Amino acid sequence: MVKAILESDPEDEFSPTEISHLLRGRSVGAIQNAMARLANDGEAELTCEAPRRYRAA
Image 1: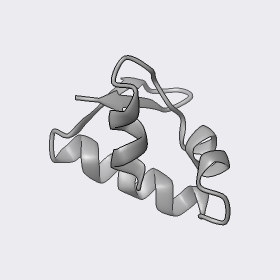
Image 2: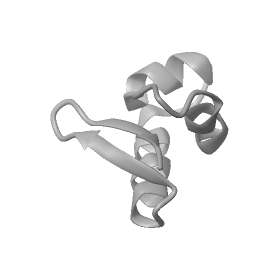
Image 3: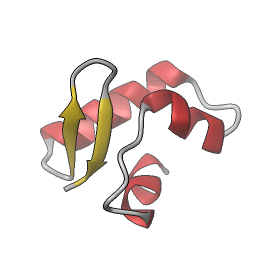
Image 4: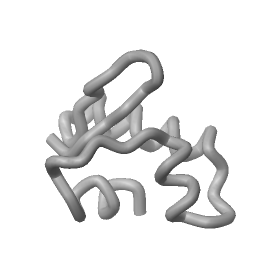
């Protein structure tokens, strides 16, 4: 679900909190873990360390 949101607009950057608002009922911690895993796998890129923001790779 997180990957689909990132890929929906590849130019936009998203924070875990912004994605949690789109995926109502999902844990911010779980979303952070998913985003970190996507970045580690090369499917997303970390664009800002603090606050963490990601976009599709």
